[in-house]
Image (cartoon, rainbow, N blue to C red; front, side, top):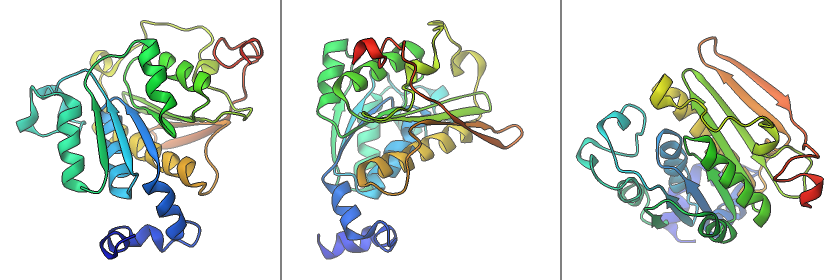
Length: 249
């Protein structure tokens, strides 16, 4: 590790439970981020700043004026550009030591599985239920840890799934799936709420990659920002889950 890297990452290297070994683990890690919207903006910027060695960014969408209220990785000048290209430029300006791979298209199940298998951790920062379920299924099949976040209106949630544990996967939480679930485009979202949840996703991702502390696997974190109340619920694997249940083992 160079002197510049030691200085860049010095504040987290100073943490006794992190140290230079944790920084080396980050440098050798590969995180896959699906969605470069409000959640993905915060996740990607913090992971790049923290020194995760390789980030793969997946998003088929382009930057729109309505995105800029909460998707802080993009700028007004980026309107009309591919979100992954806009995000790449911001991240490299923040930390040129990080390798950025961009995937500016929607992936089918086989392509998604292939990308997931190449990663050390997957961050679900998308904004629709069908994609979340597809990401979850790919992570369970590939046995790759998943850090899933969601935010709408003034509410947010965060879940971590890790292979070999008894915690619920994302599909376990939604036994009666409604594919036409609400989105922030329909009901709105307060900008900082996605930033809060995205930042926490970055924290959990770093913990997964480095072994720092205890991750949220087996627990669901819920935020009600209107009342500024947090709830932490234990969530166990559903034996009948079509993704991770007993019949799928």
